[in-house]
Amino acid sequence: MLAKRIIPCLDVKDGETVKGTNFVNLRSAGDPVELGKAYSEQGADELTFLDITASHEGRKTFTEMVSRVAATVNIPFTVGGGIGELKDVDRLLNAGADKVSINSAALRRPELIDEITHHFGSQVCVVAIDAYKDESGNWTCYLNGGRIPTGRGLFEWAHEAQERGAGEILFTSMNHDGVKAGFANDALRRLSDELSIPIIASGGAGVKEHFRDTFLHGHSDAALAASVFHFGEIPIPELKQYLHANGINVRL
Amino acid sequence: MYLRVLFYNFAPEMKIAIVKYNAGNIYSVVHALKRLGVDPVLTDDEQELRSADKVLFPGQGEASQAMGYLRQHGLDKVIRSLTQPVLGICIGQQLMCRHSEEGDTDCLDIFPVDVKKFCPTRHEDKVPHMGWNLLEVKKERMLNEPFSLCTDQTYVYFVHSFYVPVCDFTTAVTNYIQPFSAALHRDNFYATQFHPEKSGAVGEEILRKFLENT
Image 1: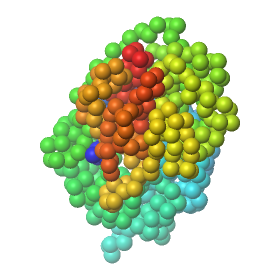
Image 2 (image 1 turned 180 degrees about the vertical axis):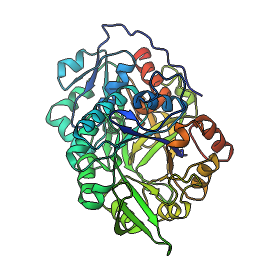
Image 3 (image 1 turned 30 degrees about the vertical axis):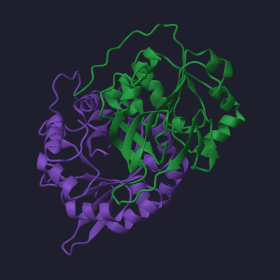
């Protein structure tokens, strides 16, 4: 049986991880390569590195970091942030990334999904969606890290992404992100039940129970989180043991 | 929880070749071998491949395009007639079979079995089969296999939409939609559907065993 995946997400700026970490025994806790390796040894199933640099120089530093991750880490990893066109994807896959995550660029020009999957296969193309649920219960997709509303609905955009060849959907609920009160399981469940590609839950993890709930009630295939792992609030081995004890199939 | 990987110093003269062709994701195998202390050569040259101590045939890609490229460069005959240990990975395993439903492609016929497309019957069985799944090693075939030290019921990483049915050459089985060949062995030819180069410490151990024991 396919295991549910636990994915730590690392924000990288100018080659350094941004959020503080609680890892001991690391020569440099800010080094994304060292941190990625530590997560991998703890039992993370995949890693995600997000480039939050804006500058051209920072982008070059990120690509170099991707090469070092590929040489060091022995589990799959996804990279995202600032991917606007096919040549960005080519550069990052050549540096050794297994998958790329695209967000705003796909909303602005959906054909990018077709191009990526045509050239490199569906399995490399993760479409990340940031969406906000308004008072009337409608989910709207946002651009640029949640700053610009698009008028596009979460579910219809997710369907289009799948039809264009996306290999996975990474859905972040802006209502739940940072609140640490659990994932957006109702929306996740609808995505998972309507779509035939894997759904990664993101935004809202605070305690171990939230991961159990998104797998059981949100029907998520994977769960991504940042701060609960970086600050050592939930050690990955403990989380995996907890999920296993609750009847969820995880890799131990 | 984790296998301790011992880093042996492989004989410096051991030459490992990786088949260079139009498939993606070959560099992750190069990195994995380097982590084990060997520096492989990536080549499509017949003499280089024949003179290597071991050959790896990895990659991700589409079967008909990959076979077309191999035939065009004469690599199909070369791979088939190699006498040293050969390890196919992912599309490599599928190309070593007789035929693939992907693009209705005649393949290398090292393993006389036909590659099928996954046909899910339940919504939760998504295709591609992507992620970590269990490897069940066939006990009666464990001797002299590169998988001999692998604990049974271990998780390895898969990404694929086509599968090799269980056959006489199956050395490990994984169950997804139905049981399929996670690993094959015949004479000097070995193959895995999963990616040992992406399967953490367990995968590293499997690659090390291939280098050391075959």
